[in-house]
Structures are given as structure tokens and as C-alpha cells.
Length: 297
Image 1 (tube, rainbow, N blue to C red):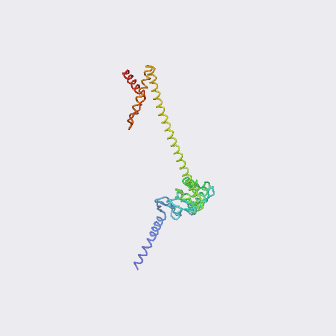
Image 2: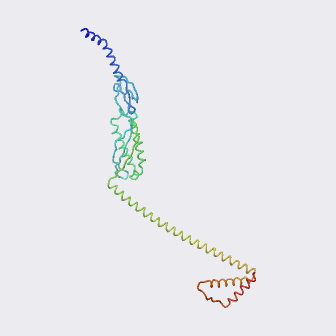
Image 3: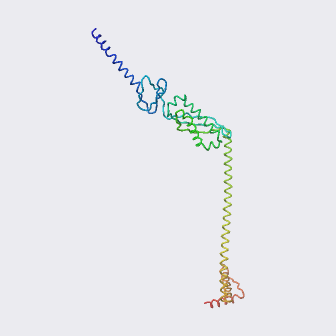
């Protein structure tokens, strides 16, 4: 009985201390918040925005402040989106897009928009239809990089009020219906045939040009050869004329005699020719030539 009285007295004296210790533990657990690097905490006080806690150890007022939202700041990728659009030349295309974004101001994200993913998807669909509606099909196919940049810039302007940052916006594919694809295939085949014909025609034209150039070159060379020969003959004639002017008729007779001798030598030099027919005055020509040669010496 005495032990029970002592125990009750001990418990009564230390009950306040136990309550105080428990209260301190609760305050520590509710007033200290450790925020991971990949998240931000949105703190409310009596239902109103109080602060946004960054990574590390943070302190709040227990029982007054509470962490209302834990928002990830990691980059997110939306599922591939597909929407229909009509170009200015009335071609129906199906465009596939993908968007990457990250939350940079969580207080805007949690208080200004309910479903951020759905809002971005709707915004992207509207922007894609608007931008493609300004282009023809060929421009859509050839200007994908420009179109992608335009979509990203337009989306970044719209979502700025939601506290997010669009890091990437990709135009993955532009699909056509079967009829349009068949028509484009026929057009492509026709274009290939036209290019082949143009290439063949250009090859034939080049061949004609080269042949004409070759003929012109041959004609120029032939004319050049005739000119050189004519110059040589003129020079020889000039030499003979000078010799006649200096030596009189004997020089002319000397040249004629030499020509006769050269002609007889050429006639006798042929293969299989044993008989040489000489003119009646051949002996006299030889005699005159020898006399002249002797006179020259």
C-alpha cells in the first residue's frame, strides 16, 4: 500500500513534465520541414498562402502554418498528343506533338490552374491548328523546325501565368490521309520522271556542245596548219624572188633545176620501180644543175 502511494505521488509530480516533453516533441515535428531538392512546399496559414519552402531545412509555426501542397519541380513530359489541322490549301493533316515543362512558381500552379497537363494539351492543340492553318502542306513539311519554334514560343507566352516553363516542344510527325498520300506519291513520281527527262536532255545538249567544240577546234587547227604552210610557201617564194633579184635569171634556172632533180629522186625512190622514164631534156637539166652548183661552190 505504501508502494502504491509513492508511485502515485511520483506520477503526479512528473505528469506535467511528461506533458511538456510530449508537447515539445510535437512542436519539433510540426514546426520543422525538410524539403527534398526535387520539390517545393506551399505553406498556408488559415487557408491563405503563407510562403513557399525551398530545398533544405525550413521552419514554420506549428498549429498555424501547414504544408498544403508538395509540388515537384522536376521536368515533366506530357503524353504524345495528336490533333487534326487543316492547311491553307485545304489538306487535312494529323499532327503529333510532345511537350516538356517544369514548374518554377508552384504558388501560381496550385492556385491558378486545376489540371495543368490538360490545360497544356488544350493550349498546344489550339496553337498547332492556328499555326498550320497559315501554311500550305509543302511549307508544313519543309519548315518543321521553324514551326516547332513558333509553337514553343506561343505556348511559353500562354503558360507564363501558370508558373511553369516550357523546356521543349517537339513536332513529332505530320500524317496524311490515304488519298492525299496517294496523290502526293503520284506527284513525286511525276517530278522524278520530269527530272530524269531534263537530265537526259541536258546530257544530249552537252554532248552536242562538246562535239561542236571538237569540230571547231579541228577546223581552227586545220586553218592554222594551212596558214603556217602558206607562210612557209610565201617565205620560200620571197627567198626565190630575192635570189632572182640579186642573181638574175641564173638563180631562177638553178631553182628549177633543183626541183627537177628532187622530183626525179622521189620517183626513183619508190619500191618496186626499176624503170624510170626521163624527159628528153632531163640530161640537160642535170647538166645545168651541176653547172650551177659548181658555179655556186
